[in-house]
Image (cartoon, rainbow, N blue to C red; front, side, top):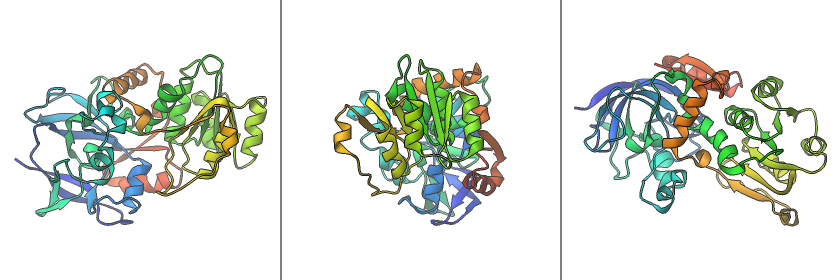
Amino acid sequence: MPITTRAAVVESGGAPFTLSDVTLDDPGPHEAVVRLVATGLCHTDLGVASGGLPFPLPGVLGHEGAGVVEAVGSAVTGVAPGDHVVLSFTSCGDCRNCAGGHPAYCATWLPLNLLGGRRADGSSTLSRDGEPLGGHFFGQSSFAERALVDERSLVKVDPDVPLESIAPLGCGVQTGVGAVWNVLKPVTGSTVVVLGAGAVGLSAVMAAALTPATTIVAVDRVGERLALAEELGATRTVDAAAEDLGAALARITGGRGADGVVETTGNVTVLRQGVDALAARGTVVVVGAPPFGSEVSLDVNGLLGGKQVVGLTLGDAETQSFIPALVRLVKEGRLPLHRLISTYPFADIDQAVRDMGAGKAIKPVLTF
């Protein structure tokens, strides 16, 4: 039977989140009903809510959910009622990239996760007063007390770890960690530079601190963020509001340049500076997303020294193995994710949005 639940609905682009009763469709064979315990708030949610992406509104967003499975469809085998789960992105499971262990580059990733608002067959997972709502966001739409979740968005996790402490693993944290572990793969003595000390950037700093990199540089314009970055593993910091970034990185690296750069700001000027700061055969990982159509000019001759510019989605992570590993690190205290989290009751979602926009909260987590 369909389930009525409380959700935060965005009525139109730029409108606030409004708590409203919505109805979940019956679970399909490859879906589960999850009772949310916590869900992270991400800049991607805010970008869609502002009308910056063509997601169908009114709709329900949220894509960093964590909760307890209540019911499963007839074909679900990976989880059972009572299991604790972290929710992440979904994928088709059949295309070349999915089969090759790279589901973040699924051939149907955009419609399944970010833009479609519906299941792959076009049916709606959510409705209100009989009218379909935009849903199926990242296969979950977790800004709700209960969510109808695609099986490939579900990751079973250790029930001994508090769910509010690991909800952000589904998107922002695995993106920052994956940029370092799955792309840069620092070797002994490497220099890693992280541009932007928000949730993704600080996750990259924590990840770099667990590698053989010996120089980890955090760059931001907010002193408090830089101080936190040092506590989380950065060996050097650069206040981009106070000094020239290129000159600072040249000084720190002795003129050699950085082996790896993680660009999280979405600012194309900062991206260009990151590319220019690379050592020969260095790599920039592009994580921050500027508005669609944004372009950046690069010095082509400067690239001929073997520099690489690599785009990244969701850490290029295979979630079923990656997220449980991160949960273990959180449990053991080696990934101090709690330093980034500020918790808010679900009803205070708009306050969390304001605090995130003002820089008061690095990673807001809504609790139910």
